[in-house]
Image (cartoon, rainbow, N blue to C red; front, top):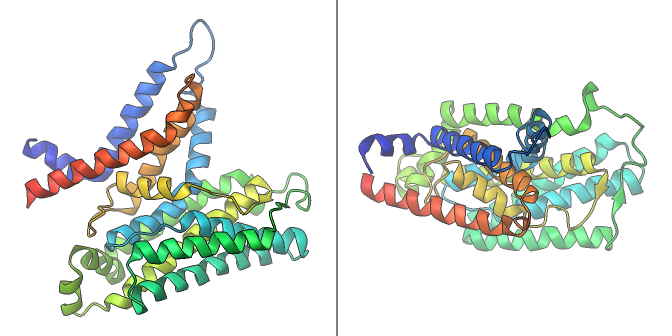
Length: 323
């Protein structure tokens, strides 16, 4: 691989954007309709649909990217999304509290999940894989206990034509995603906290000797990631109008994959928030386009796994060449 291509690859936002453009071009060509029929994939309405659906993953992927950049991994975002959504739905639909109280409680549940993860990783010194695997089981288990296998119907309590802040509810996720991506990209680049995350992921021992409070920074990253996952879960429940314990099952892989495809190195120290958001769009296009190809729906999981493996292998190859 020549130096120019290596340089382009290292600018991961550009390379991720290039992959996204190629993906859109391929599906536009492959799904080109016969005759005078409108294009089933390349149209404004479908593009907006992809953006809205991908945003739910993107909010959680921002947190996942920060965790991975710090050298860790978080397997719990899907379960935290479900628990936060269930808490919101239970308080609003069953207990009769105002929606604002349910939303606040759902996000607070994410905060508690993040604190538990941070304690297990920083104080108990468990490997992040084990700690977040445990939190994933705990969060999903509590969600099932609260629901007792039922689902909470929020839509019946919401007024007809309800528009939060004067906007359609399904626009909440894209707007929140853009705002959060801008804020956390700025924090990661301009603030000492963000630079400390990169330093810890690059070399934790060196970061410690340079005066960075490694434990506090790592704890804050897991807490922020859990709160963002909870926020995503709450928005998902409000949009769908239902709270279920099996909500967001399997989202973990897509969220982590989005961050990795967007440039977050699994060895830590590299990545970006914007890249993670672009990564969610890549998988959003896949989830939207594959069902339109006869027989291809079942390849969704396979393709996500293969893409992650290929990206990581290429990333490792370039890292060794650059060392």
